[in-house]
Image: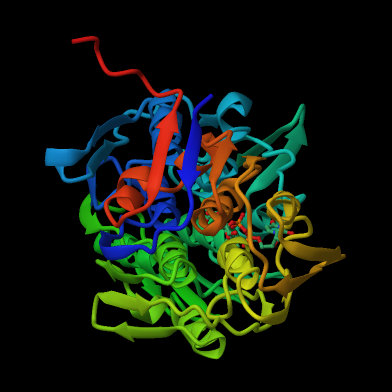
Amino acid sequence: MDKLVIRGGNPLLGTVRISGAKNAALPAMAAALLTEEPVILENIPHVRDIETTRKLLSAMGAEVELGYGRAKNRTTICCKNLSSPEASYELVKTMRASTLVLGPLVARCGRARVSLPGGCAIGARPIDLHIKGLERLGAKIDQQHGYVEASAERLKGAEIVFDKITVTGTEDLLMAAALADGETVMQNCAREPEVADLADLLNKMGAKIEGAGTATIRIKGVPKLKGAKHRIIPDRIEAATFILAGALTDGDLNISGCEPKHLGALLQKLEEVGVKTKSTRDSVRVEGSSALKAADVNTEEYPGFPTDVQAQYMALATQAEGTSIITENIFENRFMHALEMVRMGANIKIEGRRAVVRGKSQLGGAAVLASDLRASASLVLAALVAEGETIIDRVYHIDRGYENIEEKLRGVGAQIRRIGEILPKKR
Ligand code: EPZ
């Protein structure tokens, strides 16, 4: 199992380039199931969840070419001959976003058998809203032996109001409704940029979708969709992670190839904390400050402060003078990183959905454990300012969503290396 070893104390200086958004690439790859023609996606990040999705689609009979480097992070997916519309437990248990194939499979093949995702470190994360929406579209749903079996001659357009705002629930049903007979109106939808990016791709494929990115989305079903070419949007969570790394290390870091308009909540919060940032059309420059001020954060659905940036913000809060109260409103168990930071010397008290962070604490290097994707990113940030060396175990979590994180950080001055990787050949 790989580990990351980080020696803290270096300010991050220079430019780091942001990769494509994992959470836009996953639904986009699932959307290829909706057509017999090839779908070409560019700016795909080279991360573990993409590889898992490649395996998932290939197991169904899809042809998935995945190229990196000179192949410009491009994937070509052709789902002409789907042999088995199934997503097995072996794959779904490693990546719950596999449930994104449910809607497309029912819409394209008339049936789907997808493993229920089961538990997750950050919360129960059921998919009841995905299922309810499919039933509204006329699918017959059976749940047994840990699988959801869905079937429908042809889905029918309907009115859907989500009981709760769900990102992949909105995406799953957007894809299902694209091939339904008649119009679907979905309300209380997720407004995340990844939803709008998926709708862009679907419309390029011939779908008729309006309102994606707002709370109400209208979809006029079409009988068939065609292939398309699409470039995935930049990863706003990776960008937020590096912006916080620049702020935390009192650095001067330029985050290029990002979408500042997707980062409004974080950039406004950083102003409150006393961190100066300057944005252009596709970059954010952050100049750290040694006098960080405490500021409270409430995680909310987009455009509010993202839950996927909560852990990384907590690392910053340990370095701010005063008390920051961080309230996690989206998931019920998303503070596991806090306990690891306390082991590094942070002063954090967990009270239900609130974490009370008192700073500024001098963090010290320690052996710590990553528990989920964003928790592991927050431990990297804490390690960048800790005195001495931190060893982060189970970094496969971080590899799920961050492309070449150690190269990117080393490129702007961090002292970081991965151990457990293949040793260089003997001379
Ligand atoms: C997406 O997960 C993201 N994943 C998550 O990012 C992100 O944390 C989350 O949205 C919230 O922004 C992808 O896009 C692949 P939800 P998703 O459905 O869609 C409850 C990362 O770090 N809910 O919006 O699974 C759910 O339990 C990952 O990249 C139901 O109750 O999240 C949660 O409390 C982690 N029933 C809330 O809604 C349902 O049917 C929001 O979940 C669906 C969700």
